[in-house]
Structures are given as structure tokens and as C-alpha cells.
Length: 151
Image (cartoon, rainbow, N blue to C red; front, top):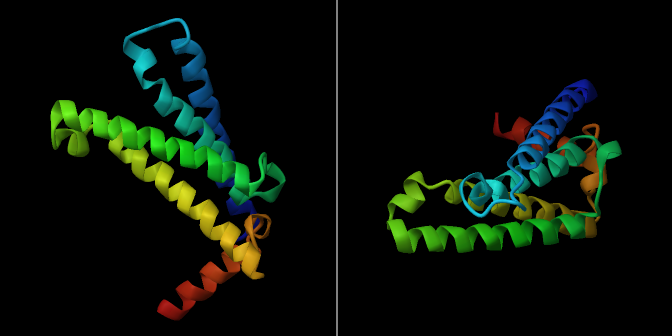
């Protein structure tokens, strides 16, 4: 069982990441620019949303949106970064996948989408949900049990 203080520490780190991403967005003012830093604002938005969602997964008291809303958010982010990767691929070829900024974010957004869909499906199956993960309850207990069996 993971001690709740560890989850609190990781949630605090996620909130720091969210604050840094928000400050980068404010500083860059992408709504006023057409080039340069404004082109990477989508990455800061993704970091901001992902950090907030992850903090809510770690500590149930920090939940901000229902799971279905997070599924929609990460579905849109996954589609957006898939579009960006495809656009980069047309321009740069395979280098867009190996060295581009958007390919890793496509994987991250897809992983977050999968995580929320899987947790929602688990919750509907009756063995806990996102609310059960905070504080290391049912979702984390299942994870610990599976790790214990593999050892």
C-alpha cells in the first residue's frame, strides 16, 4: 500500500507543473502572437490539463472534472496531436516522429485518454473508479496486488 503522503507529494508536484505551464502560457500570450512561441502553446495547454488531471487521480480531493469530461479533453488532445504529427510528417518525413515536439505529446494524450477510459470501465464493472484511486484505495490496491503477484 502506498502511503497517502507519497501521493500528496506527487500531486503537489503535478500542481507545480500546472502552475509553470499556466505561467508559460500567460508569458507567451499566444492569443496576441502569430509565430514563434505561440506555435507551441498547445503543448503548454496539454501540460496544464494533464498535470491537473493527474493531481486529481492521485488525491481524490483535487478532482476537478468528472471522468467523462476528462475523456473528452484527452480525446480532443489526442486528435489534435495526431493532426500535428501528420502535418509535421508531411513536411519533415520520419524526422517528425523521431525528433518532433508533437509525437511524444500524442503518446501522452493517448495514454491519459486510455487511463480515463479504463478507469471508467473498471468503475462500471464494480471494482472501483477514479475516486477510489485517491489515497491509495481500490485502484492502487489492485495495482499493488498485481505487482505483488509478479514478484
